[in-house]
Image 1 (spheres, rainbow, N blue to C red):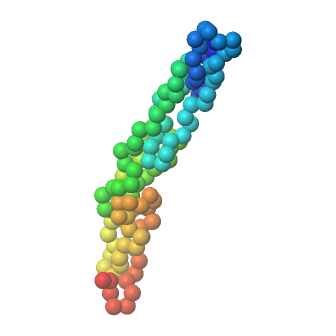
Image 2: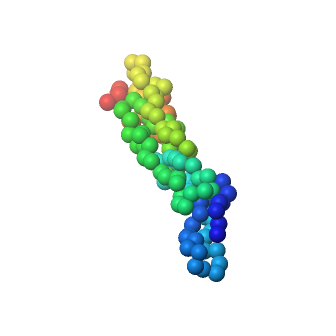
Image 3: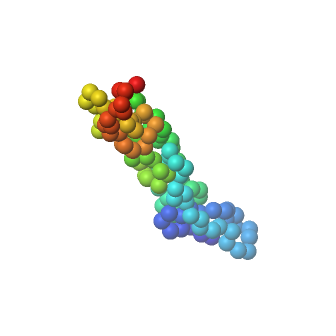
Length: 122
């Protein structure tokens, strides 16, 4: 019977001792998770099941206004990398407004100051 597999694999099946062939096989463990989650756990090759799992990242979609979600958890990282970061532009000079400001749900900082059109900023 199979007693171990390679790193990143787990043993699947049972070895009862009554069969005429090895009913155990080596299967690949999880190597990615859905977006908003990260890969945790090890897969040593000695376990009878996939010991890797996908906990939810603390920050997935929402930060306070004026911030954006940085370092998204894409499902391939092995730690919770997502954080809320301040946008580079928090206020503009008189006669300008924040264009593409961070509303807390964006995933990159595109904020910049833009000149108001004729008639002023609304």
